[in-house]
Amino acid sequence: MRQELEDLRAAALDQIQQSADAAQLERARVHFLGRKARLTAILRQLVTLSPQERPVIGLLANQVKQAIEASITAQRASLESIPSDDVLATDQIDITLPGRRPTLGRLHPLTQIMREICQVFVEMGFAVIEGPDVEWDYYNFEALNIPEDHPARDMWDTFWIDPASISVDKPMLLRTHTSPMQIRIMEQTKPPIRVVVPGTCYRYEAVDASHESQFHQIEGLAVDEGVTFADLKGTLYTFVQRLFGKDRKIRFRCDYFPFVEPGVDMSIDCFRCKGAGCRLCKESGWLEILGAGMVHPNVLTRVGYDPARYSGFAFGLGPARVAMLKYGIDDIRFFHGNDLRFLQQFP
Ligand code: DAH
Image (cartoon, rainbow, N blue to C red; front, side, top):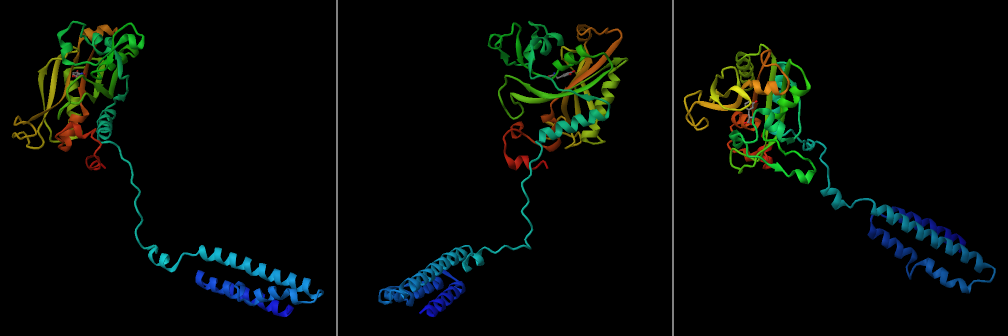
C-alpha cells in the first residue's frame, strides 16, 4: 500500500503538471481527489488497517493528498497567468507597425510672431525688455505728455483700478499700451538707448473681429545724439523687409500721438494685390501696421534728458495685426479661441 501511495503521488503530480488548461486540470483533480478516487478509498479504509500500520499509512496518505492539492493550486495559478489562445490571437502586437508619435506642444502663433519681430530688432542692436501690466497713471499717460484732462486720453479706453482696493494713493490702471516702458527705461538709463518691449495691453473695448480687450504690443525706442527721422525710416523699412519680404514698400502718413512729434502711421503696400487694391487692404493698396514718431521734447525733458542734445524715435505695433496680415487671418478672436484646428496650422 505504501508503494501504491508513492505511485499515486508520482502519477498525480505528473498529470497535474501536464495539464495544459483549466479543464484538464479539473479532470486530474477529480481523478486523484474526487469521491471515486483511489486515494479517497484508501483514506476511508484506514480504519480497517492494523493499529501498527494505520498511523504510518495514514500519515503517508495525508501527505500524498496535501502534495496533490498543493500541486493543483500551483498549476492553477500558473495556468491563469498564461493568456488564453483567444487573447493571444486578438492581442497580437505587430512590431513592424510604425510607432505612435506623441503629441507635441508648440508655441502659440502670437508667441512665434512676437519672437520673430523682436529677433529682427535684436539683430539691429535692440535689447528686449519687459515691464509691468499694472501701471501708474503717471507712466501710462502723464509722463507721455498726456495730462489728466487731455482730450487724447479718449484714444485709450482704460481699465482703472480702484486705488482704495490696493491701498495706493495714486491712480493705477491696466496699461493701455507698451509706451509707458519708454519712460521707465529712460528714467533708469542714459542714452544711447535701443530697446523693444513686447507685452500685454488692455483696453475697455467691445470685442470684434479686429479688437480684443486684452492684446499685445511691441514698443520700440531709440534715443541718442543725432537720431533723426531718417533713422526711424531706415530701421522700420529694414524690419518690414525682413518680416514681409524684400519687395515691400512703406508709406508714412501724419498721425497724432501726444508723446511724439512728428507722429506718423506706417503702412506697407499690400502683398496680396501688390498695391492694386483688394479685400485685404480694403481697396486702398496699403496696410497700416504701426504708429511711430520722433520722441516729443516734453517727454525727453520729463526724464531729465536735454532735448537740445538728445533725440529719439519710437514706434508701437500690434503683433496680432502683423500675424493677421502675414498669414491672412481675418478675425483676431481666433488667436485666443483655443481651437486646435487653427493653432495646429502654425508648426
Ligand atoms: N502707444 C500707441 C498706441 O497704443 C502706439 C504708438 C504710436 C507707440 C506712436 C509709439 C509711437 O511709440 O511713437 O496707440
